[in-house]
Length: 362
Image (cartoon, rainbow, N blue to C red; front, side, top):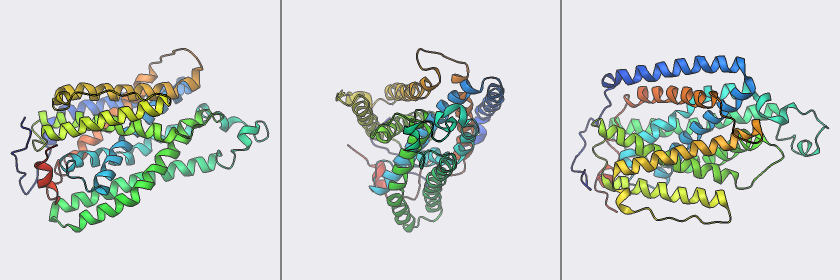
């Protein structure tokens, strides 16, 4: 792979041939169906354990999709050039937030197994009574719906204008996407923060942290950039996205490192965990994929040790549902992603900054 791309995109763009990957689509669809059926059985058999396992899987993929939406917003808000060639995949994954709404329904149905505060009547706990205006079922459900409307709406609009620009190259689309991004920044920050308060910190209503929002955000941003590295590499191996160069990988690697340090700084609070990842690794895509996979695994582990102890208290109590729930959600989202990716060019072919992105050097 050359450090600079010598490939100039054709005017009609580059389209994912879904027919080439019918086997993978069927495998993912089968995994999703079998996984969801087994999860239904688990929900009927052991509701407390299933509830926490499902919440773990849901929160993990929610942070990944939110992270991809964040990078899309930042791309437009900062008028970035480097991320033009990988932006479409961020848009595709971010749009999966709309589908994730369906996976939030079991959390709402099984809420009494997850959130202790929902089972305590007024007057029984002074701490909870002081928070009743916020911690009540109707407001909780309204906020959950609002998060998906706001985040899904921003993701939908950014992708819609991006795809529209592929058709006619209208520079006004760039202006509109920038305006949406500026409005989307506070929407994203507040939605992710309060979703983290509601669905994760709310597992223990007596505990609180003013840094909880930034902590969840740091994990979401770092793991989603890692996901982008893996998706980009997989598409390159399949013959797509040859416009992505080592320079793009280098920048993605730097962002992975930056948010790993940020996550560690917030997570340990009194320590500044600092390490220097060699530039050589950042410019070796397959080595970077190993690091990216490790970051995504650690994000999953982080979400697990945040969610599950609220059920068991102490000790390690692995359950088959801890694996089946995220697999079912992951297969479903991956199947939808494969259906989505073939509908547009794999990169924004008429973005006015595309040539600058192809000439990237850092």
